[in-house]
Length: 511
Image (cartoon, rainbow, N blue to C red; front, side):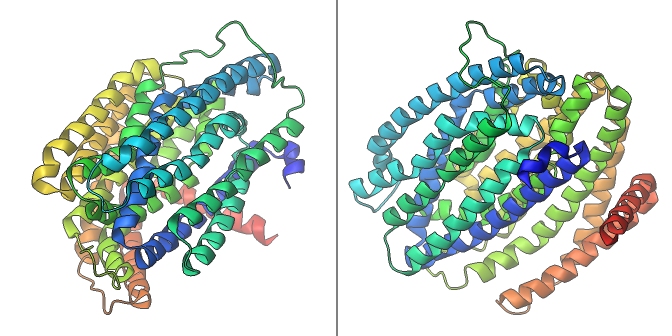
C-alpha cells in the first residue's frame, strides 16, 4: 500500500492519514487504559504516580524544541508543493542539525534528572530505584529527537502522515502485548519499561528506511552555510503553550501535592487526553491541506474549506467532550473499584478538566490556520500569556483547591487563547468574520446546556463495565439528538452538507 502512495490524490492522502491516525489513537487509548490499571493493581498508586511524574519531567525537555518542529513543517509546504527539492534538502538539513543538538541536551538533562529527581516531591522509594527508572524512561525520547523527528516532519508536510502512523500502530501494539505479559508475570517496573522502550526504537528506524527509499531527489547528507527556515525561532511561543498545557498540572502536583494526587490526576487525564487524542487524530491531516491552499494562494477554496472545518471541529468537540463530562466520573468509579489505597472519585475536577481540554480542541481551527499560514511571530504574545496564566493560576490555586486548582488554571488559559486566536483571524490572515465565530459559540453553548441538563439525570446502575456501556449509549443518544436538533435550526447548511458527504462515501463504498 505504501509503495503505491505516489498515485494517491489529496483527498485520498487525507483520508488515509485520518484513518491511520485514528487507528493509532484508538490503540493508544486502549493501551492507555490497560497499562495504568495493571500498574495500579500490581505495583500500587504510588509507583503509577511516580511513572507519570517522571514521564512529565522528561517531557519538559521538549521545551527546548523552541517550536522549531512546527516551523520546519510549515516551511516545507511550499517547496514540496513546487517540487523544489534543493530548498527541501536545505530545510531538512537545518532541522536535522537542530534536533540532534537537542538530543544531546536531552541526554545531559536525563542524567541530571536521574541525580536530582529522587529528592523532588514525596516518595517512599529507594534513591537508586527512582534514578534508574528516570534513565530507562528517557530512551524513547532520545531516539525520537536524534533519529526520527526530521523524517516525521517531512512525511507530515507531504501529507504522508499515514506512514509514520502505521509504524506507530505496530510499535504501540507490540508494547501493549509485551507489557501485559511482563507485568502479569511478575517482572519489576524497571524490566518492563526497559524492554518496552527498546520496542519504540523500531519507529525511527522504519521512517529512516521509508524516507530514504521514497525521496530519492532529496539530499539528506547536505551541508549548508545559511539558514533556510523562515521565522525559525518564532514558533517558540506556541511551543511554550503546548509544553505548559501537557506538563504543568503534573509538575505542580508533584511539587506541591502528593504522588497519590498525581495518580488521581493521571487517571482522569487518561480519559480526557484519550478523547482529545482521538479527536485530534481525526483532524490531523487538515493542517497540511490548509498549508497547501495558503502556499498556492487559493484563497477562495481556503475560506470555504476553513468554514466547514471550523463547524466540524466545534460540533464534534461538543459531542465528544459533552459525553465525556457526563460519563467520566462513572467510568473512573468502575475503573478503580478494586483500588483501595486512594480515593479516585472527584466530580468537580473531572468536569473542569474535561472543559479545559474541550476548549483546547475548540481553538484548533484557528491554531491550525495560524501555523499553516506561518504567522508565528505575529501571534506569539497570545501563547506566552496563555502559558503564564496556566502556570500562575495553577500554582496559586493548588494550595486551596488541590486537583481542582490545576484544572482551573488550564481552563482559563485555554479560554483566553481560543478567544484571542479567533479575534486574530477575524482581523488578519484569512480575515475570518468574527460574527461567524460568535454564532458558532452560541450554538455550542445551547447544545451543552440542553444535552447536559437531560443526560446528567441518568445514573450508573452497578459498578460494572456493562452497566457503564448502557449508560454511555443513553448519554451519547441524548447529546447527538440535541446537537443535531440545534444545528438543524441554526446551522442547517453544514449539517445537510455533512449528511450528503456521508451518503456519497457510503455509495462509493458499496460500489
